[in-house]
Image (cartoon, rainbow, N blue to C red; front, top):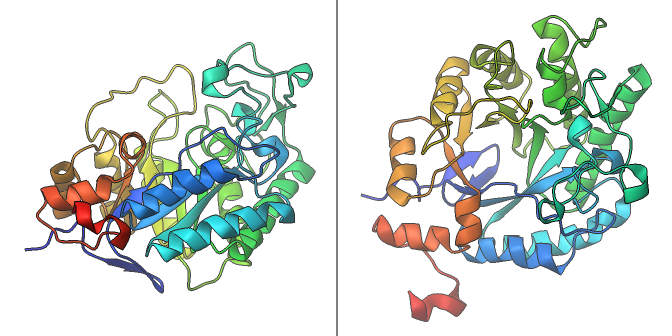
Length: 353
């Protein structure tokens, strides 16, 4: 019997050839937001390696929305051309190209990991960060609370990014509302102390995320899949939690979102995460069943049978691979052999099958 991991999944009018997704992973290799040949080879090699869906790293909707100065961007039309070239190659390998559009909020303006992951000031090429409230990620850090005009700019930037994503040939769009970035900063009471219509109640804290979904849908084709990544838990007392995640997922489903990409954490530096294999899978399962929506699972999923079991037990619909894919671009080809699935290899590589 063929495995579930290598069975197709259709969402809207796109069919993924298997359930293996390359998770968006920052490469810190862009200049002024522009993709280059590093991104072509990084993403392209994972298409050659057999993944069904490849989601480009968190791509900033504005310069101030970048995590680091080396992040990819989609805030100007000139960014589109190279992305179009990369996506054409991904499609040529029978894989589907996706993009995660993002704004880092208060977690922006830091150096790349191999440069120390340090907050950058303006003399070091950094910039003023913004958030839901003037609460820094670390106690000593400063950030500015967005006013109504600032919030409107964020919504407009996401909308414009979605339009460029269409022009670049992406076929899946994911809105990043996880990992302590801007939308998550609005969702969680630990980072959102606003007293206006964007703060306080659950309905107010989710407002910006819903406004962005709505704005994006005015540009993103109705027949293409729309995902939202959320952190199901802040792993911190008084923070965003699983129950709120299920509630939000149910609302997002009503609004036309097709899948919740379920991750966790990233909002506060004092989080306490019990990390281990499958440590986030129960969140995916609870959201999938509680909100009756498709989900993807991610986080320390490293083995073929482990991924297959998650699908067999109906805990997720797609499996995202991050670090394991960095270690092995041909992960799907290897996993197919382990699960006794005979899948198509790139013809250039068939003699090694």
